[in-house]
Length: 296
Ligand code: HBI
Ligand code: FE
Image 1: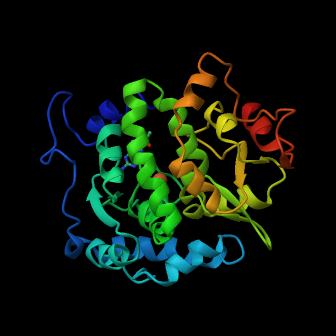
Image 2: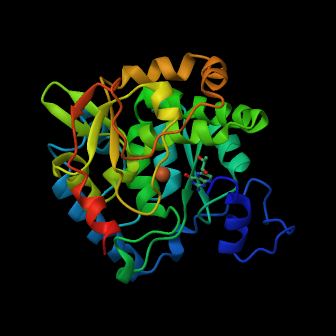
């Protein structure tokens, strides 16, 4: 997946290999006035069903961030208004892109505290299906967390780290850290394990699966362990990694990943569902969900 993002991004947006998008940074105008009532209605369906699910499941920081943003059920949010609020809180902006963008374009935006958000919204018949990130995933899932100063710094560090990891040829390792934190991370709170990953927070089915289903493993986050663990892009995760609190990401934003890349170079990689003797297991999954999927 990683190697092919540039080609994939161009294919998805009808650009011939070798041709360039209108702007070099792939941004487009959100064109907020052009969303149709039907598109706002899709947002409303998604917003309402997620808002009903997330109390007691999303972490406190997510709920707090959402509360302080101009995001509501009636309309697809206007990126200009989101950016005004975000800029004051954490110095971030939201910019519109057509969907997936090439890795280095993505990293360059993050390194400059610009969050590229898909401009389009999924069609009514594909509410639970996404080939690339749309405005619901990006805005509902990611933007509330960007109101938190720790996440704000962590995602910027990921952008900088991505540009470096590309040069070192270890992007696959770094991408796993992003995947298992920013996209599919869980966090231990005083009152239980909660969601902070945007891929979960923006998904009806995975919000429930990740926390309540007996099938997946829930394992304490460990950087080296996660760097060595493959992930699934086409289905629920087989393992979720749980941080002790968002401050754990603060450390990750500041440490040098270089020695970790050196240490794991050439070591075996772990399958998504593997549990290791060295893992601190929070709940060991039955694996039933993915076993049944493989058998049908
Ligand atoms: N583009 N819009 C968008 N959103 C992403 O999350 C994204 C991307 N391009 C590349 C990418 N993610 C990943 O392949 C990197 O994080 C490794
Ligand atoms: Fe995402």
